[in-house]
Length: 149
Image 1 (spheres, rainbow, N blue to C red):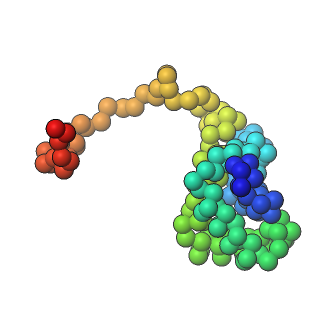
Image 2: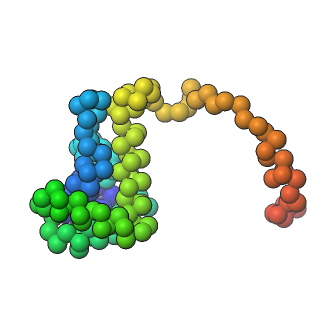
């Protein structure tokens, strides 16, 4: 499958439904839900190495639901997702991470959080100075790699 067709149409529909359940749109904060078309496009475009786990998660959800997730009423949909979270393992964790990372890099969401929607570099982000002495035990360890002749 190509990157833009890494998931079947059914999986894409279920992904959209799960994303909407995880992060619904908020008029109070003027942010889209995770089911927003731009966020969904970002998810599909950047799945990469996570495609297999996300696909497995969505297949698991489909088995539990027995029909498209969006076709279920709210209570049944919630029950399916609750059961999935309880036994979804790594695929469930991967699905949640993929949705969250794409949602929180959306410009509209960043602006609502009071952050400038930009890459961290070249401007960088200021971090408070830490206690560099915490690295002393690591520096004191003997070398584990062989030197280059």
